Length: 111
Image (cartoon, rainbow, N blue to C red):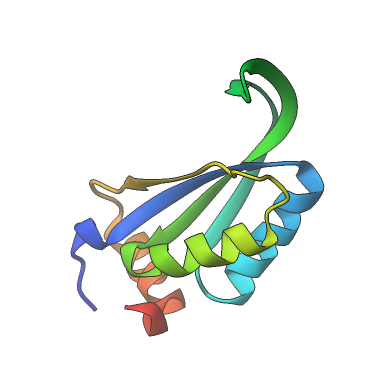
């Protein structure tokens, strides 16, 4: 298995608590993520339809691979309750080789 670190990403997704658990389970069950953490609650302030909004949400941190990005985008938009969900992918610069290898073993069919 290659340890090419450029193939790993961390996705950030914000969602209501109940939706976050469904999203996390879907990503894990479909092997689109090796690990998903739900952090929070967090308070989000943002512009939406010309007004500042304030909501309590949770933040999902999703450990995955670049090869899963397109599928995650499709699956998230199908299940997320928001009209425009937050979904950002952050490149992984480096990591513990054993951890990156573990990600490969979980998402081996998505490369």
